[in-house]
Amino acid sequence: MSELIRFSMADEPANLRALRQEVRGFIKDQMACGAMVPSPYGWAEPNAAFSRALGQKKWIGMTWPSVYGGHERSAIERFVVTEELLAAGAPIRAHWVADRQSGPLLLKFGTEAQKQAFLPRIARGECFFCIGMSEPDSGSDLASIRTKAEKVEGGWKVTGTKIWTSNAHRVDMMILFVRTGPRGESRREGVSQFLVDLTLPGITIRPIINLAGEHDFNEVIFEEAFIPDDMVIGTIENGWKQVTNELVYERSGPDRWTSTFHVLDAMRSLVRRHPSATRQAEVARLTARLWTLHQMSTSVAGMLENGEVPNTEAALVKDLGTTFEQDIPEVARKIFPEELRETDEDFAQFNEALRYCTLYAPGYTLRGGTKEILRGIIAKSLGLK
Image (cartoon, helix red, strand yellow):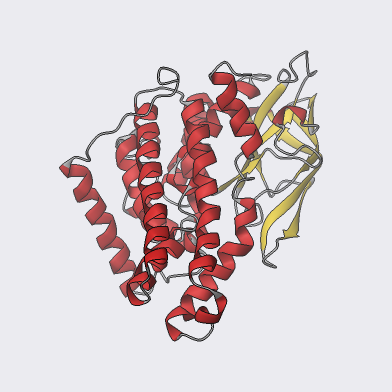
């Protein structure tokens, strides 16, 4: 197993520690001037103005070539900036998908014209993306997609439906995973990816209201929407290779274990004011798991820096990370029972954050691939499937 799953650990050098302090100083300044306001939603809050401020700091598109508006920093430097922003609950949701995976996908498979058109705008915090993968009745089985693109003069006509599309009502573009040919024996043949302007005719975005009563998810319906040929990403019917490459970025980063970090951070403060051996032990266990995930995720960032494609390691980080995210509100309710939280003013803000995370927690192990899908990837890589 040790030869098949590789996580390397190393001490953080001085330049990265200095970068962490720079990000923390920026966050402090943003809070002081009111540009960043702490929220029970954590980092999941979209704020286009804050994204533009990060673009001015050169903290979007950090690893990309300068010719495309990037800043040619290392993957580890990007990881440090990202981790600090997420831990602080910075409102980075608007540009998050574009920076995390859409941009890297275009860098690897996009045409020169696509790179020139979109990457500089993403890096400035001016162009936002969503992901068009999931479909009704498909779960996490991407190979079962039914949305079809039919070749016509000058482009493609797309018909079908995407679902659970986060942020589609707020962003500019979608990277669409669609069927362009027959399934073949493996079902992974005949699929492609397109760049889609969501303002095009034939595209309808319908809200899906979540358990918290909020509009984050969407159903996106394509009714013979015309996508020009120059919006094809990579090669027609090479979509499976491209989309699995994209998912490495989606599954391995600190966003897969920091969604409820602000609740854990608050718990650590509350335990000091309301101490008990049980509370201290539970928070210590969660903190140890947090540090382990930090180290594993940092290692994946290093592999990406070296040009590797760590599918198995990314799946492990996502599986363990999203379970960790779900456990935090569960532990919080156990060690700080409702009767304490409702009668002590120490818990006023904590209660709202806990309420939000409790309502959202069931989805953490679904988004980006269910536990079953991830564990299937891991088992296959170990020769167990």
